Length: 548
Image (cartoon, rainbow, N blue to C red; front, side, top):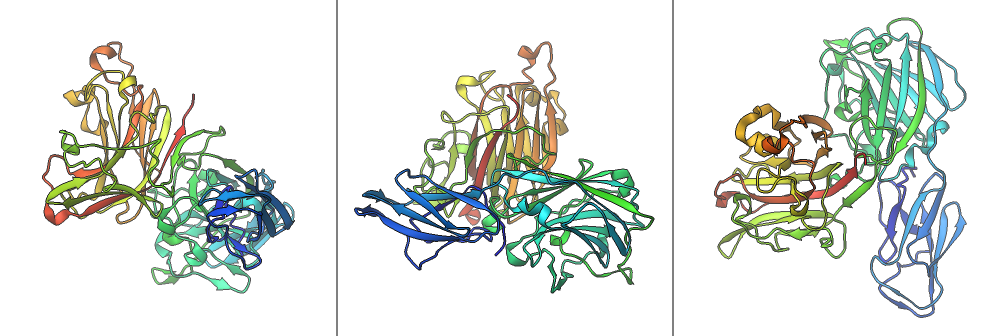
């Protein structure tokens, strides 16, 4: 079993234990789960943990007693009469040791003749077209990252050149000894082949096997610099689970070079053997002896922060993964009712068109009893935000031209700066309509909408990955609003601090805003029968505080 440990993973003991990434619980004695009802005389069940790192366990019920049997088994006992209903008896598994810094390690090498220094637990292999760094015991805690955390390894370079092409880094797998495995690859991206994965008796190079999925996009920078000009490489990892597009478990890789994303898991990140222009792909380090130092591993709780991580911890102020057994969380959301605005004329205000299913929020637009009805939810009057990052993971049907989908913010009435629309501001984190192969990320204000702003200053037209989940984000602060699509910045709009701000109303965005998730007509279009039914799915919503 892998030590792909999901920290603080909560397991419901009233159902059969299920696989989570490559880590799960099972009954050690062939028993059955705690079921709904009363346990008058108490009960005891034994569970086995599949994890290769130290762990600890806690429960949400103070009446339940947990006994650790050995390093892979624990018991849960209900010592007296107790009611046990679904999702009311859970255990939480987490690493028993905190993630800490990895001691710096340095190696020097001439291509094909690796020479290492820096202590035990490290080795270097020479593969065709790549130099491969294997991190063994020193970084075993890599797999104990909490679902709300991410981290990065950082390398510094000196006296290393490459003969041609670009430098790429691909990350995080395990070899057959359950050791984290990272790879440096040198060369031209055109020579990579996604199906050249190497498997030999001693190592398994990561790819699509064993539950690992490639990232959705590959982003390249024109004019690849030499390593000497880079000086520093940062490999960011974040928990990830490809099941249904959930960003919750496993390991996801983010690669940064001098704060510039050069390549992001090209073709799924296999190790490549191939040809380029008819010649074997075998060039690598070109000159002399170089040094690469692994400085540290840093963990941070805000793993949805796609920018280079800061050293401060940011507070999660709202999170909904739509995994509630009893449906939508009405403490946070309400249904959007019918209204006369173009986006609202089909809204039913009913859970029939906005509901939770299989860990997703489903928003539909359909025809019922001859009438077109659609769904939407909002946090108005319940949750409102500013000085934060708002992120939403969603997907939608792209081939319905008269249907529009939106993730957007409107001013909370009690906290808006200027009354009325557009004076109070509108922040569109994502809008899609009219069969466009892009999404819009848009701002509205009195200043913008009276055309005192250029079009490029108020909207971004961002590409996205069709037929799959994408992450749409916005940073809201008193100084600027920054939009992202799949961690790539698309637009930055600044507070101009005009002396006559009260007249121009350029910056209403210091007010508080509530979130809306909706599906309806595209613009002012009439919904066409051929385009319905249609839907939008939302996997999760996350809001993280930025600053004070």
